[in-house]
Image (cartoon, rainbow, N blue to C red):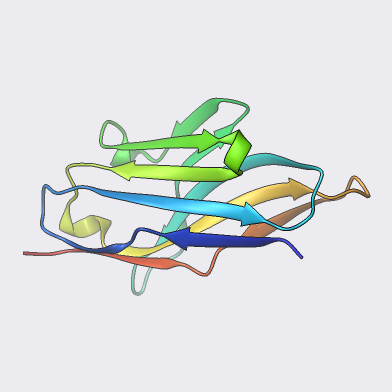
Length: 119
């Protein structure tokens, strides 16, 4: 059973920083890509950042402020969030595309972690 476990959310003042972590556990052959999405109240879930084979892509709204990285040895993806704004407030979800030993790729989601940017 594959699980994604997130940590690092919380309350921060505007201009502050937070670092989110997401570790994949369980039995699987490989992780193809990992990333972060977010969902604010009343809005659709949106891509924040993703990393695939070392290549990254970001939502325009976070470029220059957020950095996604991955530790392959730990099956962990990170999201460093700097210069946070109130509009970054949302539940952040980790996402991973993982291939099992039957060579079937599936999409997995973490449970979500709340990020609140407020003074």
